[in-house]
View 1 (cartoon, rainbow, N blue to C red):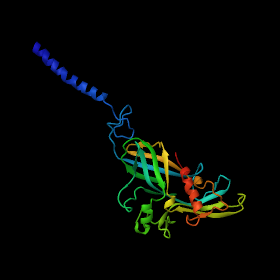
View 2: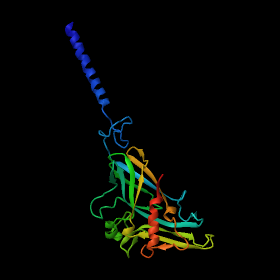
View 3: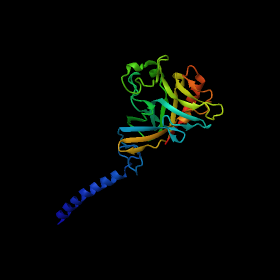
View 4: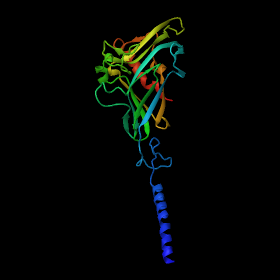
Length: 278
């Protein structure tokens, strides 16, 4: 009988040991980072988080004030003038995510100028969504990008040698052969340029900003990405009306940067306020 009792105790001890191990595992800190592969809503630590590549998709929404931007449609400026656009183009480069005080560049951030093309996005009416892959190592607290081209690429890339992509030749052109550099922002259309803004006169406007000194940086804090599986999605509004803030449409009608630097600087200064999170 004693032998039978000991045998029974051994049998009970084995599953009981398994329960203890499982309970011990449950008590360990689990991952509390939402973007991690093994995220636990009840987690309390980032120490055991496992990270996986995520596809980042950023949709830029061109606007004019509160209205969706549509080419050849009339909008009203802040001083009541009628304005319409027949083209807009804008280079966004070095798109990065801030995670745990470290910026992670989307795309290839090493190699020669010719290699560094995957973090370049050309915002056009026909091209509003940027996609790339990142391996985050923490929660995303900000998104940052440049409006314009860094000196390396701006001074050394010739679009005639690029077969495809945002740095290849565009129509209308986004490159100045005379300056051997890219246009950072290009806006054109028609605006009421009458003295009283009464619609008695309408003329074309053409704003082309560029050159290395006008490279500007935008940072948007606390972006709320939507996560679905391995994809992160974010919407960013781009108010073209803000780019033209404080312009005098009776005189501020044309800049190719070099011929009217003060006007190009005004538009560059307005870049900061043109971007906002959805």
